[in-house]
Image (cartoon, rainbow, N blue to C red; front, top):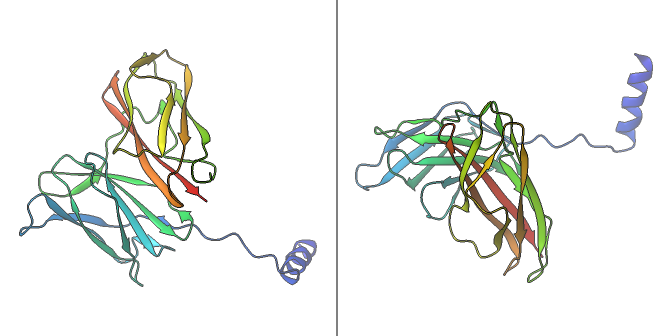
Length: 226
């Protein structure tokens, strides 16, 4: 025990800082219809819903509208008005500087209530929710691969792999959908980033499954252009 205390004191004396606490998103997040504005819903996070964050990023996965980045209040609450219709899926993420929370995917119901997005194949079709590509200078290209792991009992039919909205900086190099994965088979999706301007480049890749059950895997692609 004394040795551990000594090591901790030594590290503190050497100026070793603890790892930064990542943002978190949770608690009560609600939706309501905006009566004066047809086709718009109000997304609100109650106090404490966004922790260690200074902003929340929101994007409608079923529309090509621009994502929103709204500030987080001191009490951890936030509010946004966004274009959405019943059945649309919304991805939210708490952010602070370059740190990001695990994305949260919610679906707007007929009453604009937000419910967790259904993922019926979550136990056997595994895809990471984000993919960070290496930094690239403007006009140059970087590559990254996304692994699709399939452990379902029956074959998996992937109907499409496409960007939510046009984004010239990103290109899906391979494979070409539709295709079928046998039980236990994995494959990789190759993404390339060729930025046209400096700064953060970001878009959502949608992987749509039709069999054995309809399902979806959104993947946020992002990279920095120098």
